[in-house]
Image 1: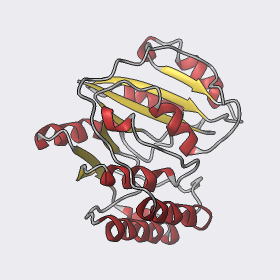
Image 2 (image 1 turned 90 degrees about the vertical axis):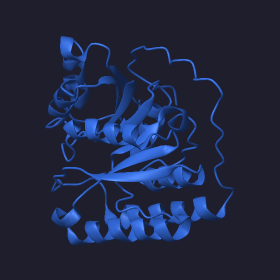
Image 3 (image 1 turned 180 degrees about the horizontal axis):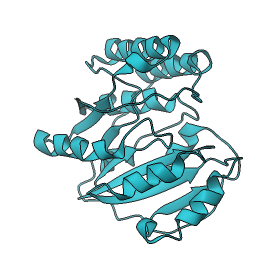
Image 4 (image 1 turned 135 degrees about the vertical axis):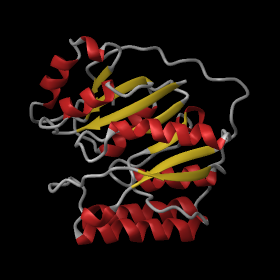
Length: 250
């Protein structure tokens, strides 16, 4: 079974090599798609050096022509993956890639293809506003969609590939997280959760005030507009042709 991992990157020159090295050590068949959202530091140069190394043979490195936001990076990545299961790996070392096998194991144990696995975090180390913003948005998600999840905003969402490739994602920034969760629940999938390790960074790109309102608006829009209906194809989709490129047409 192949696991696709999308790595959205923007100005992560200090940690991106460490994250990708750790991913290369995960004992799974991984398809890794790295999407650089037009970084202005040395991130892209570092990625070009890494792609020459044997450990990263087969990785795909994509670069946007201009910065568009995390949501746009994820939309690019979801459009390229071909794995049986799909997840996301942030490039700032808040999440440990060695937790991914536990997510896969939980999915396999569930024995139900209409299952998604979330890795939930201990948020006690986050700043007060960020922590309570996460909890508020998770609570709103549970109220609106009848779910009982603990951490809607988590990066680690392990999604069956047939569903991941069909998600009608529109979010451009961090509102992509509630949008993904809303669509998963509207598609009738059950979300299981397991604890994961988490080391919150001090300098976060997410702003609770700037990004919290669009996230709330996305939840409300997904709940009260036309819901997402998903019918699984009768046959597995053809694999996406593996190729490397340095830009994606806008």
